[in-house]
Amino acid sequence: WWEIAAFAPSSSAKRTSISSTSLYGVRSAVRRARDSLLSKDRTDKDLKDGIAFFYDRSSKLWEDVWGEHMHHGYYIPEDRTDHVQAQIDLIDEVLKWAEVDDKNPPKNVVDVGCGIGGSSRHIAKKYDCKAQGITLSPYQASRGNELAKEQGLSDKASFQVADALNMPFENSTFDLVWSLESGEHMPDKTKFVNELMRVAAPGGRVIIVTWCHRDLEVGEPSLSKKEEKILAKINRAYYLPKWCSVDDYCKLLENEGAVDIKREDWSYIIAPFWKAVIKSSLNLKSAVGLLKSGFSTIRGAYAMLLMLKGFDAGVIKFGLITCTKKTEEEE
Image 1: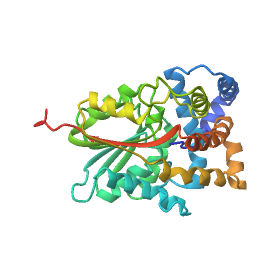
Image 2: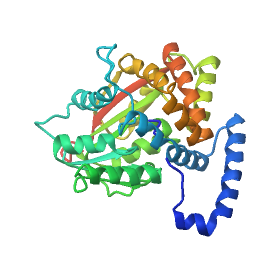
Image 3: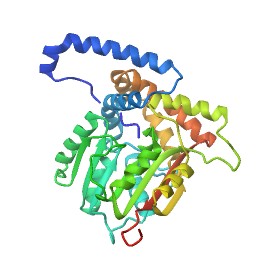
Image 4: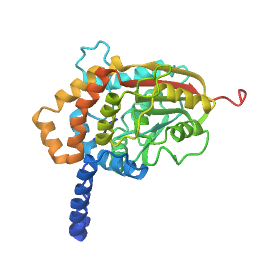
């Protein structure tokens, strides 16, 4: 989810445009610092630009410290310390929960919000299938393709810069549509779900794993002001729009005609991950990396404490939702 990128132009570009690049860097740094102090909601364009910049700046640091998987881990038992394996296990356990298995393996997968492609490559290897990943971050797409080549998976896994709200794929293309910790970045959840269902093949499976706020009680109009304040602070750090609940996602999927909708709360399963990430940020290597990555990454690191607070308060939930697209016979 928070995939943290070297932001360095090529040597030739440095020689030809160092003055304009430096000026742009100063201006953009001032703009981002000012932006971080404002409380008003960002525009969709601001969110897209901010997400790309944030992940361009921070992905290399995350990979250096945690490896290629940029998402939570599966902590059963909760005291496990093999954090990288816990991240791999999360992928496998989500697939198992969604009833994706070797008896009916996917053949064509899209990873919506792919980071540097860790789960795409894992799924491609696991099921010997094709996987395509999309991200707003040029660094992540480039790094994902580099790792695919290094791992001998260039023929199975590929990555490109694209918008999840306007995917560059034909209708009914994929038998597995996978979104692992990217839905929280989508400013238009209705359009997001519409796109996931559009590119899913008839009978194909959609899996959404995402941060959500808690479901509202019957007759409860909104979250409390205290809860909204916590989420607003996190939004500023991670370039997030307003949150929704798992219940909201289920209703959106119902409106799209999805069938076999299933949901579950795995907050307790992933909760130890946050403490592990915070602990890892306290060593010298991480501290130096944070300073090199810049203001937005430092702010994101601070917001990890807010995420932990939100989880502990019960306002932030780690939601799993899966469904299938109707077959032609069911239409």
